[in-house]
Length: 130
Image 1 (cartoon, rainbow, N blue to C red):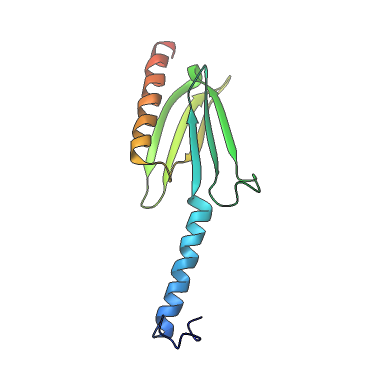
Image 2 (cartoon, one colour):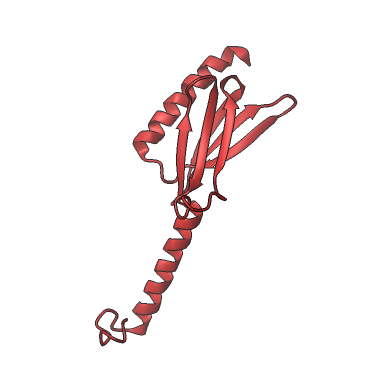
């Protein structure tokens, strides 16, 4: 396309290749880190749903669902990296504690605040049980 426009879009091959690399990296980021996050704490079970932002309607191979009883949740932590955010939840099982990692990169700051408030309330209720 750049050749057909008479190199008006990118005057140099350097800019053309740099833009191709940028678009490729951006699509790779969206594919791996761009996941839709859904949280539900109604009832006695907390469910975390994570599914891909691209091609999730046709192929659900990237969908991960974690369902945990509220009384089993011990603690959580949110890791903020430069372009990636992750929620780590520690919960108890019959013999050991398990840790799950959930991608929340596409969650808005307002919804992250509500997620923290909800998890804090659950952990506060669980403190006498531990």
